Length: 137
Length: 90
Image 1 (cartoon, one colour):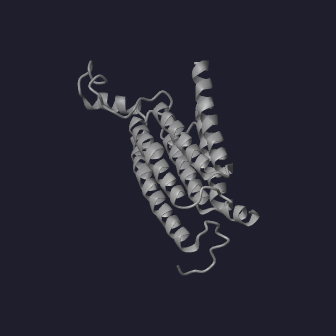
Image 2 (image 1 turned 135 degrees about the vertical axis):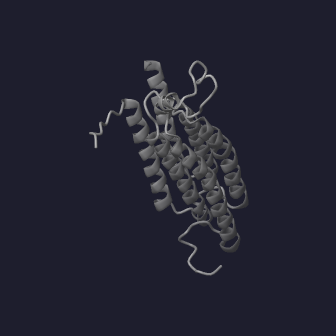
Image 3 (image 1 turned 60 degrees about the horizontal axis):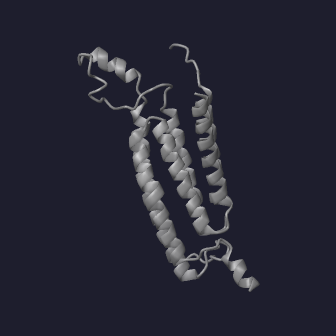
């Protein structure tokens, strides 16, 4: 194995640091707050931070978007070596596909959690989790 | 180049600030608007990180649909975080 060199510029440090800060803020909101809607807001913020972290891991410095457009292939023949050389300059598409799925699943999770919140409020007439003590609805 | 760096770090600081604001805010409607600001800045950051498809999805789902279902929930329940304390004080 070759020696792996960590050459991360200040821009990527900024992205990593702010993504981790957003994750920590969302985790604080989901763990400490007493209101049920505030807990769901905290989970939503945490999910946004995780998405930004995954996209930042797949980014390479000076890369292009992972799309083989006709303008990109215009002046070169479509050989395997050319496609490999173009692919080395591109951003990693696998985390982007994962995050695209995770955004949609996160929206579904938020919708289900909020419907449960509305149902709990109709039964208990409060959203403070200290007041909701009994286990059956 | 330095203008680009300043723009980028202003966006990142805006995102972290909006996250802290929407956790600390007692009025839940303002907190939901804060999460909308987070998603908007996040879609611009995805575009900068060369992920245009993710940016489009985040702009559609994060800004519009999530805010709408949070507002529907607040309309059906309570608007303030400490609703119980307010009732006891009155």
